[in-house]
Amino acid sequence: MTKTTSRIIKVDALSRVEGEGALDLHIRDGKIKDLKFRIFEPPRFFEALLKGRDFSEAPDITSRICGICPIAYLLGSSQAMEDALGVSVTGPLRDLRRLIYCGEWIESHVLHAAMLHAPDFLELDDALQIAKANPELVKKALKLKKLGNEILEVVGGRAVHPVNLKVGGFYKVPTKARVRSLIEPLKWAIDASRDLALAFGGFEFPDYEYDYTCVSMRHSDEYAIQDGRIISNRGLDIDVSEFPDHFVEEHVAHSNALHGMSKTGEAYLVGPLARYNNNFDQLSKMAQATAKDAGLGKTCLNPFQSIVVRMVETLYAFEESLRIALAYEEPDASCVVVTPRAGTGHGCTEAPRGICYHRYSLDKNGLITKATIMPPTAQNQKQIEIDLHGVVERHMDLADEKLKWRCEQTIRNYDPCISCATHFLKLNVTRD
Amino acid sequence: MRGDDGVGAAVAAQLRADNIEAFDFDGDGAELMEMWAHQGQVILIDAAVSGAPLGTVHRFDANSDVLPQNFFRNSSHQFGVAEAVEMARVLDRLPRNLIIYAIEGHNFNFGAPLSKDVELAVLDTVDRIKADIAP
Image (cartoon, rainbow over all chains, first blue to last red; front, top):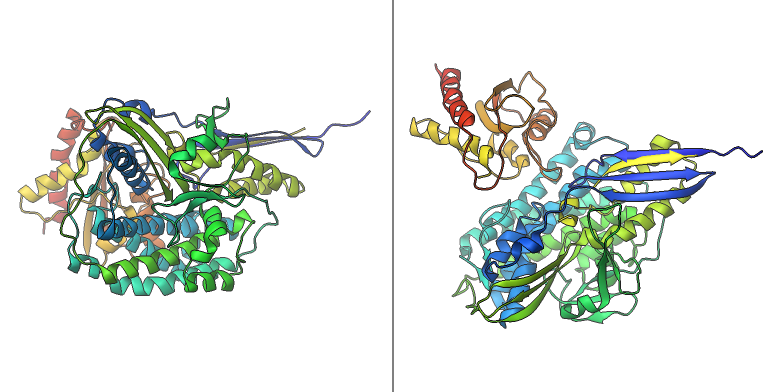
């Protein structure tokens, strides 16, 4: 009679991610019997809440979906409204939008990479232990994050949930002196973020690669952040308005967040790795050189190296911020005038974690009749489960505690924002 | 403000009315370290959720006490008070004298007023702070 061996590994509350989720893993006779990445944070029904509201309220309401990436919601919803109302925001106002989005990338990427993800590679529990082991690295990271917050304050009025953005532009534009005050700190930050990228590039990365379908935005003239077309490394190249023709969401019983997938049911990847793989050629020379010096090629298929990609993107965001700050002149008007009318509009931007899609329909008075928002973590869920399968199969020989850690690390590769996805983790592993 | 989360601002407003220097701060906790840099004495007031009765005023001497985890409301992606204090301790960036008042709240709904018991706690906290800083 053959003896059956079973392992059950449970993570009941995943740490160092935003929101509440869990992982259940059941291994029987050395094979995965069941693996579920569960999001149990309750859904918040933002789309329903928006119905009947004025178009102008969408940015401030949707930005409350997330305290980490409010700009993704402020700008995604604003652009969708502008699309529906037939206006576009260009020139210096567009530059200001790119500047504040750089601030969001910086504060989000630095916090995740240095404080939440780096401990995984150093076998430390949290950022406090890193601070004990390497206080200078943490001081540098905190200073970089603070500068990201400062950009949000200068352009958006405050660092947490900025209040100065609206459909059509801004309530008030920052003074030239205020924007120029960022210049000297930004010069320091470019070098400091390179230091962190090189430091993280020296980590030992677990052995795992996947041939991802990378979906990101692409802009004709720049590394896409706040607008562009939606492309993939499989040949997709569509206007933002065509997103619903190619991607869908499905409810799965074990998650409160919808799973995004292609219309043919395939998983895809959004976020820093997808952007890097699709748009490496549009990074600055310094960002490309830093990526090379930190051990990355022109494409990156090991999700554990996303920590390095985040710092390369951070460096690029500092360079872009400096470029915009140096050229900044106060615009004559803080916004373009918008007039309510019936219509449907689409908006999409690159949130720190990947593309964040918005669609709204308006009646003739500009009241919202239908709203759809697809945040990046919902789109990545299916791919996260595929990565977990691959990583567990590759590292089956690890003891339960080590395997549990490796699974959490795999999920943290995505910097998942469960709060956004529900508009994540407890690990439960069973081995039979 | 989100209901009882406004207790810190309410205490600060009362202190300012009594000509005592006080600031509101609603940003990232990581920046607290910068705010209190080079300060000799700092008193920080925030809402708490520990399971104690509504309006309970907790007082910590951060220079000698380790702050309890999961006490202050915050996101895992932003530093809360406890994380900021412990990080500052590790990086040797605590002010010489840091006292923390944490006032127990229950209602954190958008736009809600302070609970009655929290309103009373505001007055109690202001009196205790005056005693703390009395020469």
